[in-house]
Length: 201
Image 1 (cartoon, rainbow, N blue to C red):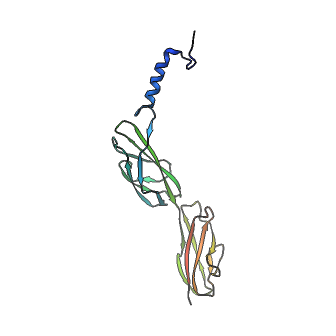
Image 2: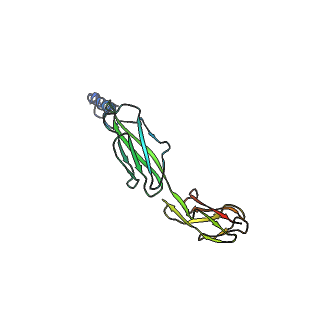
Image 3: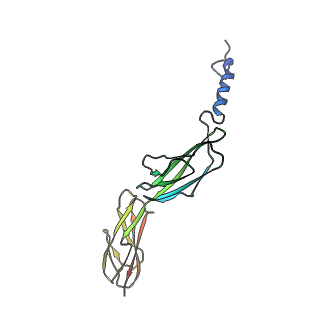
């Protein structure tokens, strides 16, 4: 019996297979998806533990409410999961997270879009500013909120601006002036905390 080179099922089944394929690719059928949302603000950046209001602007008419979802299990939370506006609550760990937005267009096509949110660490020094007498010693403590650990490397920004030990003990120079203590995360050199030291006359 003759069999088509196009199909192992024979010529009689080709029309049915073509119809099935066309239906799967038609709008609103099968797995077809569409995008067409803009989400403000852009870029979406927030500090750990902070909040970020978000507004979606559909480029077409929607049938029903827009739905929001945080993709990662520990990627933060949302004030509400439906509507064009929501507030994102950043988690306690810095990183890149994703929101998935879903809706149904008036033409029946499903809309699905993923947007990225960057959650930044919050590096701080205690004290953040201090006055010191010449040659006085001041102790600093670093906090790298959102990082895996608080370990840092210490430095004084200005040449001749004093010295600082590995445990954050700063010794002011004999010369009065304004100087800066720098703490850099050992996990990410881009994460830096800065404190100001004013050495009095």
